[in-house]
Length: 291
Image (cartoon, rainbow, N blue to C red; front, side):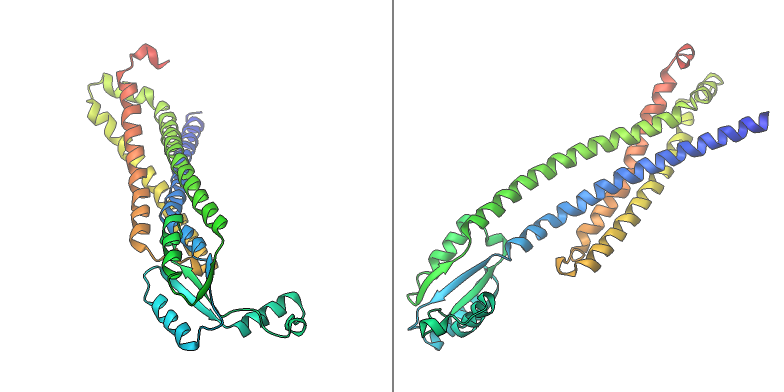
């Protein structure tokens, strides 16, 4: 009978430990994913904004030297990420491939113009900066027109602001949920030992002496859960880097390392504080209140 009860207690204890580790793992994994997304959100936003092309068209009288001089100018410009020179012949061929027939046969000439497709750096794809860049380029009298999707620029910037705000809200919400879940799991674990705590206290053990094994055990469980979360996050990073190498998600190794260390630190901190206050609560209860 005693052996059966001991086995039951062991199973319940293992189940309690497992629930704590699982809670810590799941919560810290979600927080880690959010942290990694936050540090890469600017890069992702810039990557999207840098795909918006500004096309600069030249007048027909602009000769090759003028066009090449413009290429040299924008190459040295701090706001240019990349650029491509498109001759009017190449543009005509592209249009022919798209529409499926040669429009120059009907017109008798090529009405298109030589142009540069310029991709700006993400930090410059905002309304004020892109307007100033456009105004500066238009000072070149050989430029006939500058075209880019202004509505798309406005839409992208507005959506980035909204997403950033929601990320902040979700981060605070998840952090709050993390504390509640981990705290609840640890309190349930300590609740099952409340009579042991009170017995130790009644035979003269100090509060610090009673708390120590519970705190140390919880910190170990927190470290196990946090370590599992870190391993899972590393796996996610490797998968994303392998599947989407253009994102360069592993470039900022210092910030990634900081997020992973923060996950470990949060796992230890939350379990320590939760165990400390949960144990203190049972230490302060009267014996009658334990029931």
